[in-house]
Length: 368
Image (cartoon, rainbow, N blue to C red; front, top):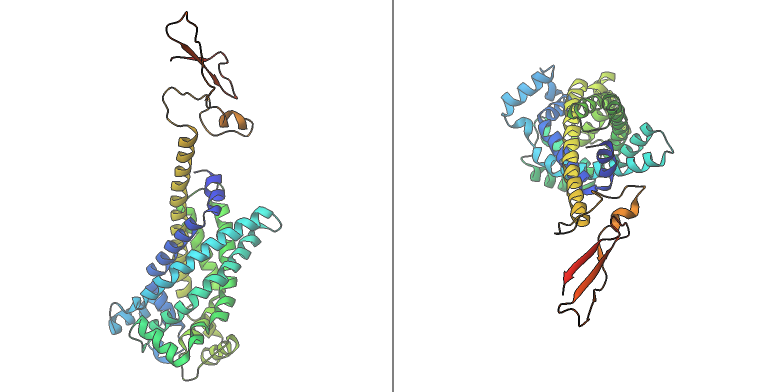
């Protein structure tokens, strides 16, 4: 598929972007969910959560041995329900806004990618924030919730609807710079590794991993604050980003803001690699099949397989010859019959007219 097919045509296909985005979001979060559970544990400020453990392997091993083999994937169902629609909206908005901004050429392309990422993040986080609240409460050490439904019901009964959006502001403050850096880095890396902008799985995977790792490292302090607001660990309930920043410093000192840094980077790099690889794959497959169907329909429309008709033009019109293709089908005028008594049978003369005449003397002789 050419650059024009791959980059220009898809921007008009919202359904393809939404479908590809939904698959990408679900694949990304499901495959990396155990690592996400480890990251949540390592960011926890509760002393009991990290007693005697010093690294990613220790945390994961402790979860499996003391809480069961399925503990690292507890709550994965809520991610499937939330990530699908969130990423469908996310990627379709990003593609539409990116195409609009880059086509107008009133700002640098890199800033266009960042601006498109910012706007799409606001909508994406509106869906994913409640999902993250339920997910992280199920992931935390000694979680009192038995299931997804139990977590939603008890959180709503004790804290109200606002509990599901308590970290929304913090999420936006983290994800807007995260996604801006993420998209700018991804598009820049893609331009470097894949200047032809064709479908290249390796380029998409490596570019996604680099973008995710850089963005994750920069925004880790805000992610720690978001985790604290979502889980509400400790005796005092914390609300607001400023209070969360103070609480993290009080409980963990300056290094508290970088709890789980390595786990977050190791989570985001393969996560974004999977996300972009899946998205670009489904985008390519959906658009390719649609392009093929469209070309087939056009071919059948303008080149019907009728006996006795031959066309001088093999395909759609070129820019320089717009009319020769549209009106190249023969048109019959009414037959003129001879009623002379000299002939026992009348002979009909039918002239075939074309706007683009390939044989001006062509006549169709038929018996009538």
